[in-house]
Length: 448
Image 1 (cartoon, rainbow, N blue to C red):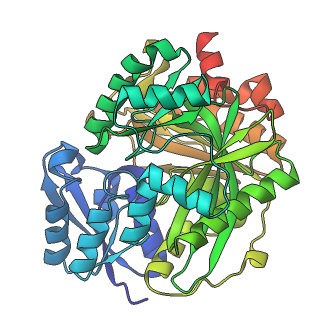
Image 2 (image 1 turned 60 degrees about the vertical axis):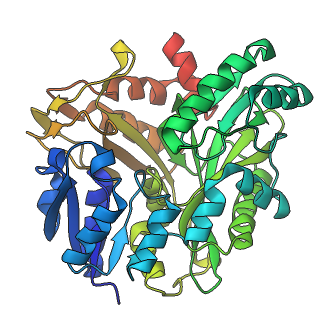
C-alpha cells in the first residue's frame, strides 16, 4: 500500500469507521478535531489528533486550506473526507491533487458532473437511464411555473446544486408554486451557495432505492446490489435495508444495470451510490442523483456481501485493480440498518444534545453498532444528531426484522432522549413488515 498516513477530514462515527479500516490496512491515521470534538472517540483512537478550529464547522471541518495545512504538517499523503462536510466538494478534491495528496474518493470531474443535478440528468439520459419528466435549470418562479404546467401537478422543486433534502419542496397546488419556489430557492442558496432550481414530476407513493457501485481507475465498474432507503423523515433516511424487498427480478436487474451504465458514462472511480425513485404502482424507476462518496448506510451492503467498502476505497485510491469481478460478489441473507439520533420524537424531533450517562449497545451474532459514543460522552449541539447506526444481518428479512426488534429493545442509552422509540414503531409496523415500504410510511406513522 503506497498510502502510508491519512488525514481524516471528518468526525463522528464515520471517522471511527475510517480509523478501523486503516488499522486493518496498516495505514497511520491523523484525526482533525474541532474544539467540541477534543474528547471524541475518534480523537482517542487515531494515531495522532490535531485541533483545527472552533466548534462551528464553517470555521473548522469546512476550511479547505486549514485541512490541507494539517495534512502537510503531519506528513500525510492522503485525505479521506468521509461523508458530509467536504466529501462532495470538487474544489477540495482538486486542491488535494494540487498538494500531491491522494483524495480517497472520486475524481474532481466525477464530483463536479454529478454534483450539478441538471448535468447529472443529462448524463443519465445520454446513458439510456430513465429520468422523471422535468426541466433544465430554472432561475425564476415564472419559469418553474411554466414547466410545472407542462408536467402537471403535483411537482417537486429541487436544488440544482445539491441534494440531501435541502431546497426540496413538493407543490400540489400550482397556485402556491411561486411562494414555495422562493422558500426552496432561499434554502438552496443558504446550503449550496446557488439558488437555482429545477422541476420534476412528483410520484406520491414512491420508493427510494439506491445501488452501490465500486469502480477502479482501470475501467472496471461493479455494483454491489441495491438498498431500500424509503423510510425517511423530511428526506432524511431513518431505516435502510439490503436487498430491497418486494422488487421483481426484472426491476432489480434494471436498477443495477442502469447504475453501472451511468458510472461507465463518466469514467467513475471509487465508491459511489446511484439513487433512484421507484414507482411502486407502475413498476418503473427513474434516476435521482449520484452520491460521490461513501454512504451512511454502507454497512448493510457490507453485511450481505462481506466486502469492506472503506478498505476498497483505499485500495482504489492507491491505484490498485479491484480484486474481484461481478460474478465473484455473492449476496447472502438480509441486513437492516436503523439510525439512532439524539432527538426527541415526542417534541417534533428536537435535538437533544447532552451528556450520555449510560451506554449499553446490543451485542451478539449478526449485530453491529457503528458509533462514536460512549458513557460520559457529551453530544455536541453543533453537528448532525446521529449518534449510532444499529445494523443486523439475518438469514432472511423475517429473521433480520426480529433481530432488529430485539436489538433496539436492548439498546440502552441514558442521559438523553433518542429516536429509538420511533424507529421501533417503523420496524414493527405491519406494512413495513410486509415489505410495503414507501416514502410516505414515516409521515403516516407520525400522523397516527
